[in-house]
Image (cartoon, rainbow, N blue to C red; front, side, top):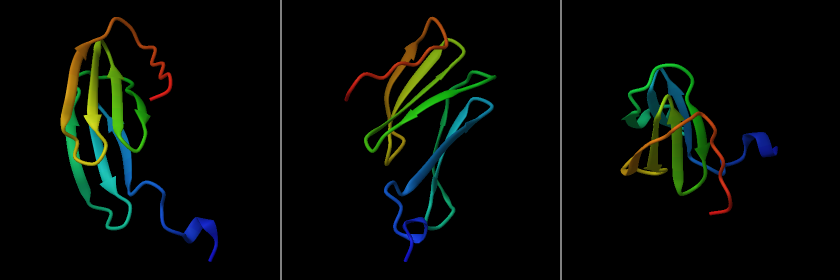
Length: 86
């Protein structure tokens, strides 16, 4: 079995479209959770096995990767996203 067909490292695919962040289960193709960023235009994402950070417009959401639970909802003064370590 090739690595391509093996078990995914992360069971969710996280994407953003029109200010909405969506997680889809890679095994079933079903939406797992959804979060409203509320900003139109491009959304920058950082995704790891614990957190999802979404930055769009002047807003930033920090979400739990597995559940989509809101950890923080912050005002952001720009569009740069830098993640340093954990």
